[in-house]
Length: 272
Image 1 (cartoon, one colour):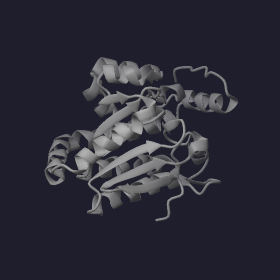
Image 2 (image 1 turned 120 degrees about the vertical axis):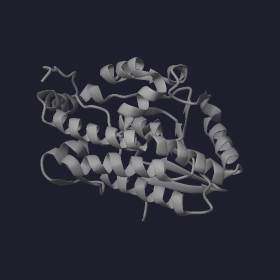
Image 3 (image 1 turned 180 degrees about the vertical axis):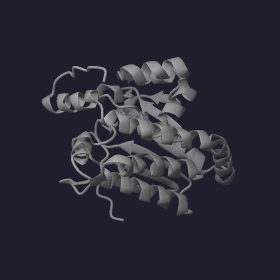
């Protein structure tokens, strides 16, 4: 596949994947979902690759699903968009964004590293949560964000997030959807470490190379063993998230959130 929205580089035995929709803060559209899945398959199959890093171009890691495109998808069964993406509404869209990507990330034995270089919001943060290790720059900001649009989180984050930070902290992060610093993320156990901006990618590369030089066969088996114990709960989370996300699409609050987004104002939610 030719990659339009990803930059794929191979540095020794480490794959470096950069989200490349800088003008959209690396928001993920339908085409980009397909490219990510294709690259995950390449990472899994390519014997030269022993570890992989995901990061973003510009000032964002990723701000999650492309809200402009998703809103177009609500209007009909399938929406074509200007930059080559193709997104189906309803269950097909949810299945694409949650199950295929999450389950592929869980199934590959190669260690996947999220290098959060800037904003990681909504689905962008959720993507990072499904990586095996998460590092952030000092200037990075994170947030679940979904509730700002009257949506619930997806990509199994309703299961993964409470396991990382505890149930009550997870609910706080989800209910309010506010941004927080990488320092705060480290304090609550959401990420592995924080590095200064100037040496951020250097430090992440060093970690990836250390993994790549290690016993990657055994590392892979350890990863798959851990993930196998979580698989059924992750599958359940994906199903529940899909069901309840569809319910939010039918709510008045979601419509209000959508209008507020395009009108560049604060939403006036009604609670229904």
